[in-house]
Length: 292
Image (tube, rainbow, N blue to C red):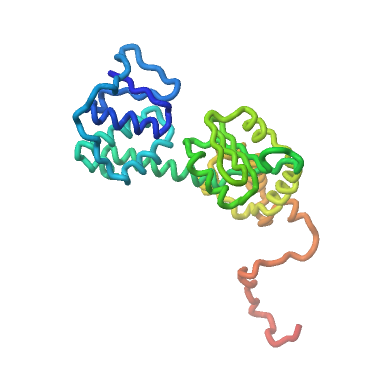
């Protein structure tokens, strides 16, 4: 086995992979090493790509490169091996490797689906916290723990929606800072960014928690649906996350009969019925002609 070293980025992998295909080195002879990975005990010396090659550069569909770049965000030990195997097969004329029905293509499309879903999770479950008005740097900060490397590609969503507001998102691996005009991406994430994101000074959080708890409807609780739409792994990084188990426990303990939060149910006054609620049944003994 030979090992192919690169900087751990898709651009770095693409450059090395192109040269490997031109040198005619098949996938089963390569171990991919990105960043600080080290080779195995019986690996041969790193592949030298300085020798002259006579093979033409492979003609690869643009669509395939886009698919491979997206799939590269999927965190798994053999992420680069699968990508090179598909690249090699397509370069050799076997375009079935790109299709969901193929053994390699199936894995590719499963990874693409997981990456898209993780980007959706970033957009749906990230919570920004405001910083003091006199603080320098970002005005909003957020901490997130994605399962895949989607921060760089998916964070532009917030730049489009927050305009010139300066914000920062930090993760255990990387971080991105929007200065109001352009994105600054760092990998690994600077420790100062991580500190700001994990220890926000949000004076309005108590108000948000009170609002969230008061609008919770225990009568409509469906635990399995909740955990499907909002995976449990995100709860600890949501301000309202610690409230959710408590609210579910109250619902199971009888709060469902009220159809509203316990603190709201204890309030006095007339109940307001939902406009779509069915009217009460008419008693056959009622005199419909009797005036009120």
